[in-house]
Image 1 (cartoon, rainbow, N blue to C red):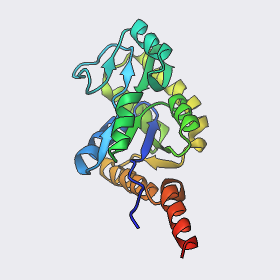
Image 2 (tube, helix red, strand yellow):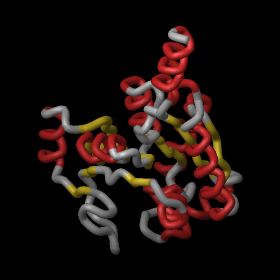
Image 3 (tube, rainbow, N blue to C red):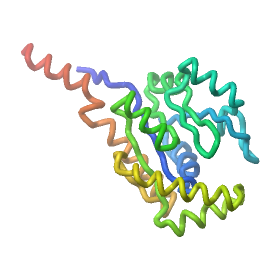
Image 4 (spheres, rainbow, N blue to C red):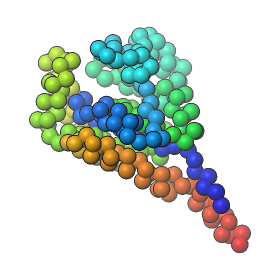
Length: 209
């Protein structure tokens, strides 16, 4: 009997701004095979060093709203005055090829995807403390003090949704955290939800004996 479960795992990784999600995603893709990182669309301006189609698909506000209107996004949310969203086409094509697709998105978008795709794996990344979170935000040197305060207040609200995730990973050591992420995603391939077709085929063959 062949294993007919070949579709990849759709994983959403969320966390406070400054939790180190971006670094973890880069390490995950460079350390392990079979992952595809979904590139989000955004209406915000590029930061120094960011590339179109690699960091984000950069859109004007009007262009983004047109994508919403045409149902071209798996999810979308507005965060600190800018739109962020996940284009459908790339994600679906990678999953069909058996790739494990990782989305790095905010809680609001994560809940949208979980509602539409209940078997999505949700992982929340957090620094070990609030003090460390503020230190990382200030250390980036890319935001004004006013924006940092907005992000800290936003984090307080986001913390209220942490219980809705399947796993919480504390990013104290990026190498250890990356390994933990990989192990969680690999384990998800063996849950009953992701082996539904295999289970039904097994039951059918047993009844036909």
